[in-house]
Length: 110
Image (cartoon, rainbow, N blue to C red; front, side, top):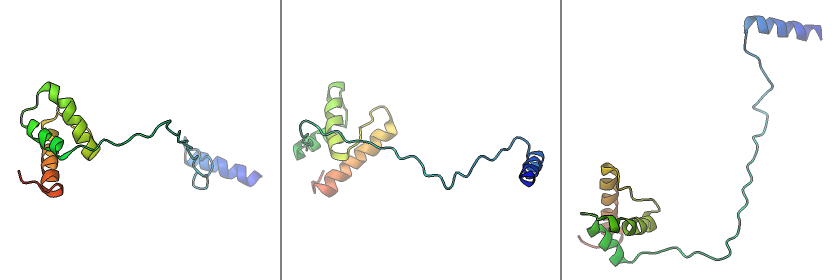
C-alpha cells in the first residue's frame, strides 16, 4: 500500500495536473437503442415519369419561382437529395448530373 502511494506522489510531482482515471480501452461504449415504430400505412415511393424528368430539365434553363417546388420534388425522387437553387455551383453540378442521368440511364438524346 505504501509503495502505491509513493508511486502516485512521484507521478503527481512529475506530471502536475495530469491525472489518470481508469482504463477507457477496456470499457464498452454504450449502445444506443433505436426502436422502429411501424407506420400505420405503407408509403409508396413517388416515381416520376420520363416526361416529368424531361420537363424539369427544360425548366432548369430559366426556372420561375412557381416551378421550383416541382423541380425539387422530381429531382428529389430521382436522386434522393434536394436541389439547391441558391448556390450557382450546385445548380450547375446538379443540372449536369440530371443531364447525364437522362442521356446515360434513360437513353434519350438531348
